[in-house]
Image (cartoon, rainbow, N blue to C red; front, side, top):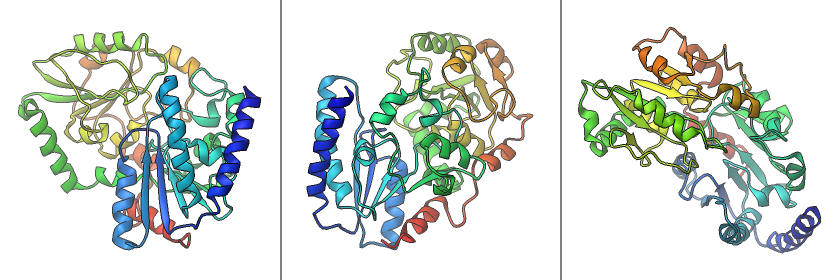
Amino acid sequence: MGIVVNVGIFFLNILFALMKCLPVQKKITYISRQMDTTPLDFQMLIDEMKQVRPDIQHVVLAKMLKSGMKNHLFYCFHMLKQMYHIATSQVVILDTYCIPVSILKQRPELIVIQIWHALGAFKKFGYSILDCPEGSSSKVAHLMRMHKNYTYVFSSSEYTRPFFAEAFHVNLSQVKVFPLPKTDLLIDSSHKQAIVARIQQSYPQLLDQSKKVIVYAPTFRKDDSHFKEAVKEFIEYVDFEKYHFVLKLHPLTEFHIDDPRIIEDHQYTSLEFFHVADYIITDYSAVIFEASLLNKPIYFYAFDYEEYMSKRNMYIDYQHDLPGEIYTQPQTLLENLHDKSNYDIQAFSRKMVAPPQKSYTRDIVDFILQQKI
């Protein structure tokens, strides 16, 4: 396998060398394989950049890398498109791993910025979990030059900088503190009012304020064989006379819950739905950072704690550093819901997410423009 991959990289570099002979344009290319539509963080950067520098061209290449030979073949053609735009751009911005960025020999003057798609660093990822059940193998990481050729990596706070440096295997000096652009939306009251109105229009049952709103946003699991049953068990303990229950599964989760009593939403992001939540429930998901900025009660449903921790470790102490209670039984968790948390959620938020200078989005735009594009 290694020989085949290296031969493939060799020939791709020959093709890429020809592409690099093309004129470099005043262009920023944004690449994601998190979704097939433009990620919110990219769109916010583009909108802000257009206000400041309308002369810069923006190209978004968003395409999920799905399983299956046919999908992999189509993605190979998409990679050729990525290669062209990488070769002719001044700046490339990523929110995930990008194969052509890492495996190919880049122009020395190309600026590659990894903003990552998750706010903060919670569970370990990247180089921090090589050869772990939830991570990549070190052989594959070496073969595919995982997370190479980055100029900068963005972190959510000074405290989390070492975590990002470790995860991406870069020098600490390359890690800059810039939380994600979409963080602006959590502290924008006008946006909150607008999104709450939109959600209530989509789900008019939420207008019934006699019921509190629970939003459950669990993390993605590579092995979800027991996860679906755990979610269904949790739902059976919900008192639907008292609560609206919103299920926000990770976009990569493949199963669905067919239950007319709940709202299993795919239209809005977890971040958006947190605005209507009275209680936020998660497990090992980095959404805790977004949730903490709203200063709403957070609860942790860790039904598979021992199993999950045997496969995946944390950058922070899960048992002691979280801004909320941890439960392994759904009945106990639901019995202990209350309006006010005994935890200092704001202190946790300040530690994990740095405040902006102007705005989160504008701070990043200013930094990019300082790179002399």
